[in-house]
Image 1: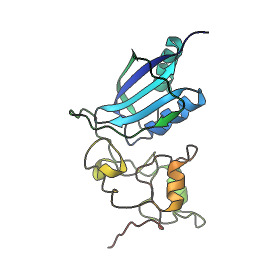
Image 2: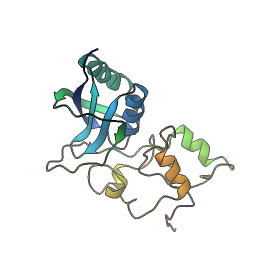
Image 3: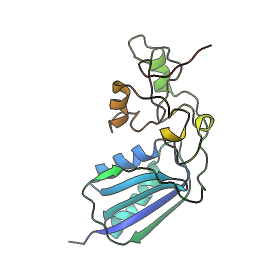
Image 4: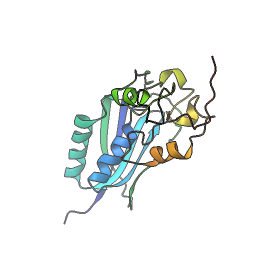
Length: 191
C-alpha cells in the first residue's frame, strides 16, 4: 500500500464568493480525502492527505469541474511536510499580509432563486435579498478580503435558525453562502 503524503493546492482567480469552498468540501469528502480548505487574501488554499498520483487527479478534477462562476487564473500543487488529518473541513479564513485575491463581481439572480422568489410556497417569496452561492451581490457588499460574511456589509445581520441550517448543510445549495438570509432574519430595509 502506498503511504499517504500531504499536499497543498493554492488557487488564485475569482474563487471567493462563487461556492468554491463548498465545491472543494463536497469533492474531497466524496473521494474520502482528509484535510481542509480555506479562503485567504491571496486565494483558496487546500491541504490534504493522499498519494502523489491522486493529488494530480484532484488537481485535474478541480480545473475541470470548478463552480460555473469561478475563474481560475493559477493553480499550484506542492507536497508539504506530513500532517495527518482525521476528516475534511472548511476552516477559518486567513488574513495574509499581502492581498492578491481578485474581487468577485455581483451576479444576476440565478434560475433557482428566481423560481423561489416567485413561488408563494417558498419562504423567500418576493424577498428582495434572495441569493445563493450562484448569484447575488459580492463586489457591492465587500469591505475587505478574504470573502466571508464578517468582511461584507452582511456582518451585522444574523442568520435565523432555518438559514443557518441551510448554511451548515453540505447538500444545500446555500451551504456556506455568505449572503444567505430570508424574511425571518434580522435584515432591515426601507424605501
